[in-house]
Length: 510
Image (cartoon, rainbow, N blue to C red; front, side, top):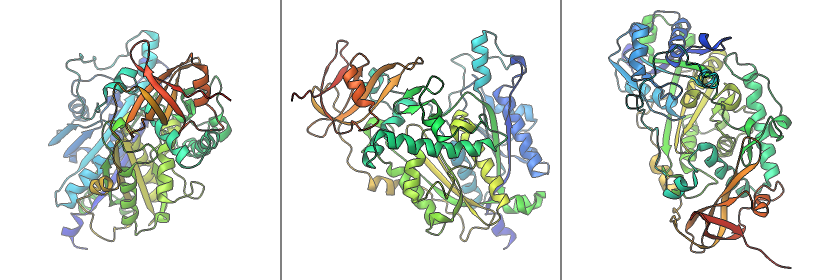
């Protein structure tokens, strides 16, 4: 290998993580300070002076504190002046994408040292709000001055806004319910599969010193609904959803193989970026073809398998995004992998490791780097996802040199679009018969149902969204049966008292 070729080979040269568990609120570190610690940990991991070599500093979109310009503040605290300092985007796939974009620039011949960093102090901020005492952090920016990170909002249909179905925790259940029906599962079977899978994530988190929850609940505890594990949105209880109330940060440094050697980073620490793929779904979740699959996810994972030589079994280490169980369940089916033989996480998942909003995959990258360093020559797959099943990005990594140069065109959007079926027209203001396509039930903190949200299909194939009130006990019981899915049940949509559409099941007499 020539020096020139080594300059076009991208590697992950260092990773760093930090977790903050202060005994007192006034000791809690603010997000930018958490990021500072993660970057210092990167330099310690590299074993050489590193931070003043950074030419691109990308700060992943944060939520837990309003800053005017957090990346500039971070650079000032570090005492560096990178040529590029970017307040990057929101989205769970963002860390993977930013690493891939830096790798692309290096593969195209740019002499780049890139640092990708993110962090959240949501737990500390929540404690501060409960106590009514402001933490001693950088003064909060005004609403007008607070940085606006890209991809902080997605297109949303008027009916979704009217019914208030705009939270990912309300949308992913649509995929879970539809997928269970498509896979021929009862809700009880689907719940148990989720619980068993989540127990695997929990076991990994228990061994990760940077994880937030290390108690390793088993599948029965995860799948049993009770006061401590209340339902959030059917069919997911608290222990099956992402946990954003954490204080965590992570950072990654990417550079060329030649540069890493020049600065003196040990060869056995370097992780080669073989390549990856990205694709997106239509932004508005009511304008998707179906809810039991994602053609963007499938295209991204299939390209990743191709990069690995066509055999998903070569991935000895996986990080399958885990905001909600349906995401890795779909991914495992696409990959054809048994989670018992191929553990789905190296970090611990967004419930148990913790879900620092857009930055979980930075921690997953750090954990993957450690796993690969410990198993020379093996392959790892990172799969991140953002939005409402919107954005999908994957990377293939190894300590081994890639068999071919990394492709600089990694979009598989055309493949995803070609595989996608026709989108049903959305029928706003519809009244009439409608068959359930998928659904969820929203719950209050006391465990009582608030209402049900139904996505249904009219006789002409048009899509309809409607609700059902908690007072309609018959409908709520139908939708929350564990023995039989309500997908495919016939009913009627009509205008409710407040003008919003309401779905009721067809009543049959004996």
